Image (tube, rainbow, N blue to C red):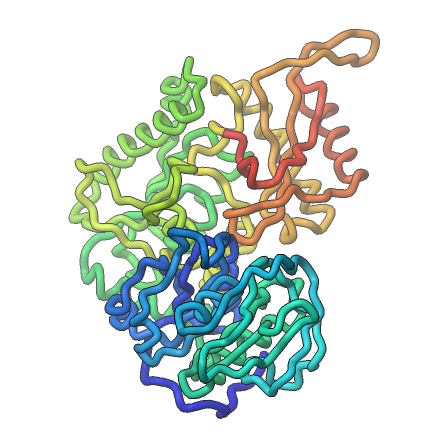
Length: 523
């Protein structure tokens, strides 16, 4: 981390976040995460944001993301020109840099030569964002076809490449900086330093946003929101609801009652672990509802994945209603909504990818106000908050688990027998991942039970059993994911154990599909 230095006019008295303006690039979230990794709070806003809306947020700085379009294409996303007149520091990345050049009177040209991948960059002037002893010759990651041919008036070119004359530029007095490359990706070795110089030196942001400060802020916010009212929380057994419950409990103590609806669709032994952690160790009032029989009855004959999701969700709501109705003075409901949920569900242009996000409120007939203490956090930040609150690693580092549980990892009808098969196979996958020391490197690793059978041979007999699909992915936030390159010997151990230890399984396959085009879950 670089240290703040006084190289530009002093920062405004803004107290708000650094805003990342999304122009449709896949990296907008990553930029926001990199800002937070510099211990500066950031939020993502759409490019349709108005200057008045920006001003109302009193941002410490604004970052323009990359984008998939050319600035010359009809309907290409832009920013309201009045944003430039607010006096807020601005940093443009890739498309964001070209947009700054075009809107402020420079020239963006299609030279017929693009730059993609690793590119050699030469720093030709002592630009602010290249300070701190960075080399004058460095590698960066490029992804563009159009190029800035002429910077706007008053801008100084600070870096070039062999192909383009303006790889970086700045207007020190107006505190506007732009780079053609992507500093947010790991393929730009000095990229984080570039971002930190903008945040610290240009915006004047102190590196003060920590998980401890998040806990303090949210504790105060929860207390202010709920007062002396009774609050309930639906514990799912996952990381998000667990950390949300622990955070709210720190804020209001005995005013919180947790309800754990055990659907029978959880991973092996997870239900008991939830009760042990929250009731016995955390001292949280917990109502444990064993509802497996009701779920299997409700799911009988249902094979369509969306119908299964709806059935599981609706039954949960009805059970939760029955329980919560007996909790006197309950006015608030805690949900473990995360920032990616908000982003995926809250934009006008977002397509429906999932139907199980918490975002969007409650059924009309449920009269609770929502408490969402994790709403502005990414998953890795939630884990850090959980550790800060003293939750055990078994909870904090539990891999993401879909709301409908194993109901959407069993393809076709969900039955008790199928759940038992999948629980055991899934436990073996997770045990072997943990034994290999890969638990924190893998975003998710689990087993899927497809609705087919295949021929096998065991001993001297033919078998006709279930296959198990192993799925393991790496990711930072689940918005995109890559299939994990697990060692062959690890896959072999998983396969051998599953076939030998799980009755009715005679074949194991490994899913090597990334997201996109696939999803992490099968249903």
